Length: 114
Length: 115
Image 1 (cartoon, chains in turn orange, green):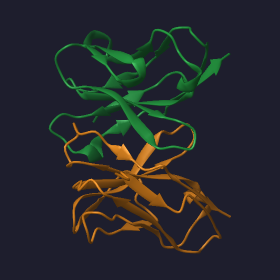
Image 2 (cartoon, rainbow over the protein chains, first blue to last red; image 1 turned 135 degrees about the horizontal axis):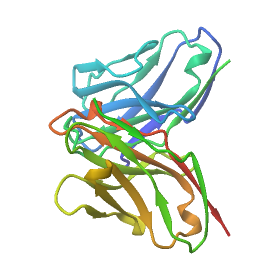
Image 3 (cartoon, chains in turn brown, orange; image 1 turned 60 degrees about the horizontal axis):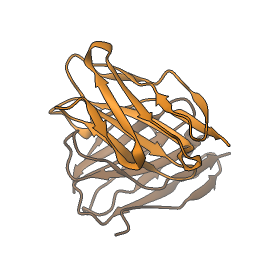
Image 4 (tube, chains in turn blue, cyan; image 1 turned 180 degrees about the vertical axis):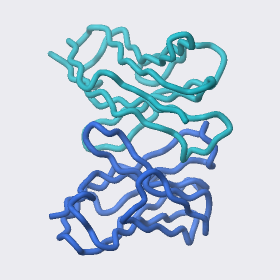
């Protein structure tokens, strides 16, 4: 199994550009989420989804959009990139939305906005 | 709402020495507790988790953690570290009967191993 797959691994954007971080999981997990990781701040939840067609905001949603048209895919869109969005982004999934489930993480996407 | 604190930003230990990484949480009841490890350039991997029962939890790679309700702590331990244990370690707290979206991650402790 591939688990949670994120692309691209590295990306440099200019301020104001848009892009989409792709995320796919092959474990038939209901719950998927996006985190950003910044030095000294741990992981902060951006958006999450409890199933196809259902998304909701996390702790730091501003500047990001998501959609969940299929169980497998959960892309994260930056509509107009800003330097404050320079970060490492992790997609994650778990069997369902209950807090006791193991969360499986992708390998991360390093994004730099100049 | 729950919160989690990892007071040590960076720890260096010698290979073969014992290790203890600290984690303190704040929550009104007994939460779900997790330790994740992140190797350089990789995502996070679950080491172990505590739900209930025995307060000493065994995990992968020889790690264990002990839940101490009186101290609101869930410290991670390993009797003898290996060079491959160099990584960043995250403690996480989840409220029972809640959503995974409410899991809070600590800011992490970076572990370096001295040869």
